[in-house]
Structures are given as C-alpha cells and as structure tokens.
Image (cartoon, rainbow, N blue to C red; front, side, top):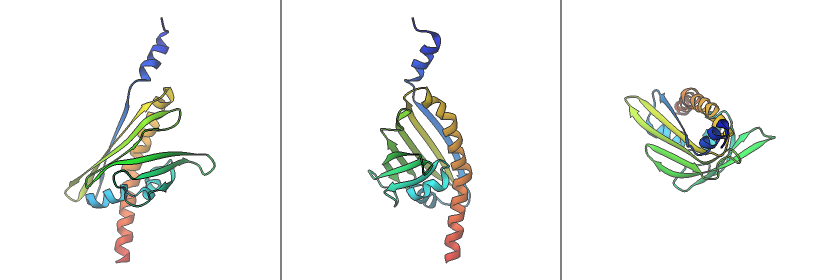
Length: 168
C-alpha cells in the first residue's frame, strides 16, 4: 500500500484548480473595461508578475495569439495565450501547454456586467496542476488576481479615462 502522504499527493495531481476573483470598476462602462482587458499591452499594467507581451498587441479577437512574459528581464517565462472568446461582455483565453513542469490547460475567463455607473468584473482562472507546485501556486495566484482586479485595474481605468478627458 501507498503511504498516506503519497496518496494525498496522487489525488491532488488529478484535481482542477479554479480560482475566482470579483471586482467593481466604478464610474466606467463595459466597453471601456473590456477594451482595456482585451488589449495585451495593458496586462503588465495590472498583473504584477507580467513584464511584457509579444505578438498580438491590439484588442484580442477569437483565435488571436499573444505571448505574455513573466518574471524579470534576466529570467523570463513565456506563456502563449489563445483567445477562445471575445464578445462584448466576455473575454476568454487559454494556454493548453501552460507553465512548464507546474500546470497545463491554463484558462482565464472574464465576465463583465454593467451595474448603474459601475462595471462588475468576474474572473475565473483555472488550470490542471502537474504536481504539488501547481497547488502551492494557487494562493499566490489568487492574491495576484485580487491585486490586479481590486486595486490595479480600477486605478488603470481611472488613469486612462483621465488621460482621455485631458486630451479632449
């Protein structure tokens, strides 16, 4: 028989990790928030671990591919995302290969909803952990998603709106 810890680790290796984060962008509309999220060059502005993007840099459309770079300029990890859905209120991307040695079938699904003068943003991130490191990454990824959606996204949208209004 297997030792109990080994059984737990083996069971972990088959379970999908799914993380949910919700936020509200005050004083905005769905089109503005969707446009921001669908433009890959904006990702490093709101994702602390993202240092750049390559490939499609305009608004993502279905089947567009973009490579997101994580880490530092010296040691980078590249993840290729494919846009699987881009509709007025939804943006969904997938990276089948995932993060080498950590996770596969990584997905990001944004759903936007207008609520009076605000936009409700719901993000669901999921992936298949390849080992225990994939599970250990979940709390860190969850924290990063919260920082991105609850702090950095509303601030970036506000700055973008202020910049647009000052040019008018």
